[in-house]
Image (cartoon, rainbow, N blue to C red; front, side, top):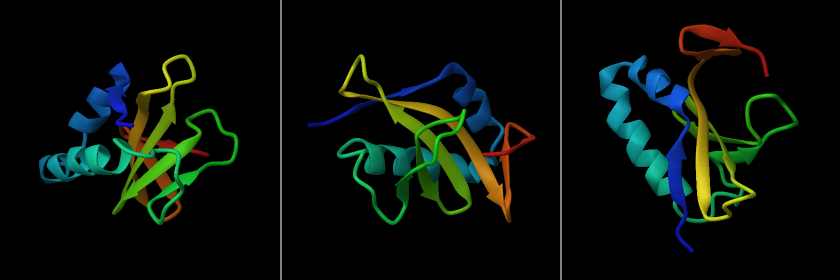
Length: 99
């Protein structure tokens, strides 16, 4: 079953805040990794411990995509946040986030 990918409104601004050269790779990887079996744990996809951000994380190089599979619409993957990992710090829209 193919999943439909939706972006939260705040994610559009987070993507625009990224360097232009990273955006195409990010969008292509989101489509490749999350269209089929987004709940299957892989080397780049993992469930997270309970946190206020999202239940799942997709790793694309130094970028992190936080997402959920909607319970009310089981064929929809909602992207909740996109950030950049720098060492032990996660930067989303220019702000450091603690998970």
